Length: 99
Image (cartoon, rainbow, N blue to C red; front, side, top):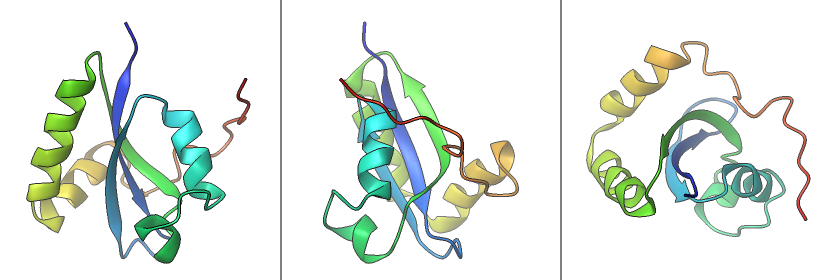
């Protein structure tokens, strides 16, 4: 079974938090970093992966994304701070290669 992910991106100043869902986290982060996806993340320079959760079912990931998007910023910050208190880019060092 394929994994699915809910992820948080932010900008270099950590002023914006974007929440997304994907079945291919590495490819999606690459798309955000190269601004291949025009829209919110490109406009606000959100290309730093600061948090993600893994799911075995895409429907569970989508439900979690909706739940997280309905929450306030403080709740999102608490999730990030719990696992990544320095707000480091979790994708640093990833080698992006796709068939």
